[in-house]
Length: 104
Length: 89
Length: 152
Image (cartoon, rainbow over all chains, first blue to last red):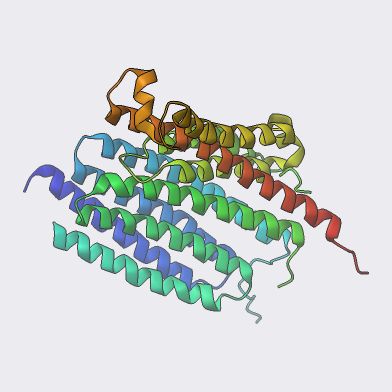
């Protein structure tokens, strides 16, 4: 078992873990804006970790350079898409979820 | 290593089915668009894993890069349309 | 009419990304032999870059960069390249689109002449597809603004 193989297994397992927690957050959070927190941050980190893991598996070649391109593009584009859709939700009049005040 | 990649792919497919619940039952249209963007992100990794399993990575890299691009443009266009029209919940 | 977006994050991202998307589209057109791609796919990615520019910057700023006259010239020249290579093969005593007769002009063996002929055809197809998809999107977005009626 060489070093690159062990590293790629660790990064891929970490990517799967963050995908799972992002999906659980998307299902269980009470409001649209909090669901955007879960999927915007969790999914981006999980994609970056998975791509690094796959890049270590491949070695140094043209394919791993293209994987680096995909990672840079995902790092730029996914937070911007989250920002755009949250702005659209705010402009359309969605109210954020507040915890009810306990009286007494 | 092939069995490990195959199990990661199966795990991601199960996660896609869980996100489909939010696409079907999300109250309103904004939840559905956010969930579709999440499905697109998971599909990108599944495509790369399939490329590694078939031992032809050079073919699947180009396809996955184009798919990431189209996912971004679709989400931006949908967000702009919803902002202009003023959707009632 | 698609208005200009008043958010600085989205506008900056579109300005950074559009040249790189166009370079990648040219790569996809040129490598049609060896990897998935070719003329039609590269033309669609070129049109997607222009549509990204249009939905973030509005119609007026995009028309300053590509006017309707330039789009018409692109589509016509794409078809001209395609038909021109075919008629050139006819003139050189071959069938229509028989690329091996191009070996007389280019001074290479017939296998290389076929490769160059297909490359020229793909470039023509890519230009035509980009122009047509952009103009279809432009016309549909224009027609929507004149068809809406306000009910009070």
